[in-house]
Length: 230
Length: 291
Image (cartoon, rainbow over all chains, first blue to last red; front, top):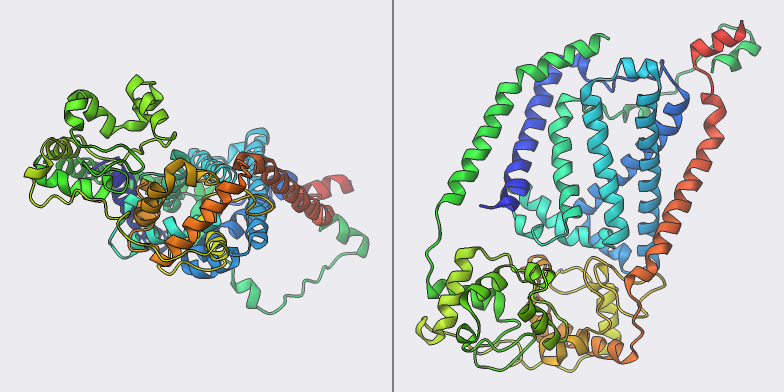
């Protein structure tokens, strides 16, 4: 038993368990609290620059993590030609910086806008701090410990598979630099925060919008007004 | 807001469960760390074969590191205990013997093997009397193995990953750089390997390719060892790269990654400008302006 086992075996299982149980409990007992607690009605301009860049950036990057977990061989095949590897790494970095800039705008908005500040809970601060750590350590790794897109498949794919198959192999993480281990540990902290915070809105994944029929919105106003309201 | 009120009580209600989970966590940590392992020379032999043999022999001459025969009489016991346990820390603190050893061994530092205090004690018990601990296999395995002739071009492809490793391990380039490998270099998680051939020497590199005596690689390549042909191809590849000597530390490439990352971000923000006008006003703002 050592710190490595505590942080990367025991804590992850507790985090996963907590995230699952509390999310189910919350959606059964308080379904209407499953919300992103949008403050768009209170402030829109900073939200546009912050939310769009953060969300698109983080969703694409998270999907790439998931793809690396599900199709490690496909990823290694893509990376087997250096120019493709560089392209993937540059894109990931661009999305990471985009996401970080968006997050910074969101923090600034929450601090500078009085109306937004009023509806801010301590948990919002926790979520923002955890997300900042996650994105900053991720960028740090992408810049200092290249090439994550390749070594993810050798370290984190087997590690995560070992967690899911209940045969944890934390020794894979033990020799890695602390920034990388912080990135992983912080992910499990996010899992713990998940069911207790606005992060829970992730489970509402709005994929239905991709398949539903178009909705036609008809404005019952004069043409000139329409622009001002949209 | 209503939704805020709803959430806080849930957090409070679950506080006991969280506290209980924390208490269980600490208790299990304490219980698991309580029982020390038996310190025996047999355990020491097992550790030696698993973690030391790739770089050291006992009476078989030097490999990557020095021959460890009678090391327990050459050095103080206290020094051995702390150096084997935390060689990286000893070096960082500027220990004179550790610094001298580093210079004597082509600047290849001994990695921290993550051994516990009691494991180091067992190892020392074995090193004091290698012959006494069961069937000691003091001969290194790797150098005795005869490799087939290697191929430089294939070594290159194995390094970049164009030819996948048979055992399923990741390609070298994911973590390592060598001179002239690609426009923006190789990986930087692991050390630059341009001069690895002369640094480790042929026997040392042969042994390293067979056993991966470095903690990160040992874990990654568990059950994914290189086959003899791959070892031979990579050995030839490293020998030639070393001879060409185009050393280009990965740090040289850092600025390209900063540049393209930030440029990409700027492009993405530029794309957002196209959609900006439609987001300009909130409903209340629009109403206020209309007046």
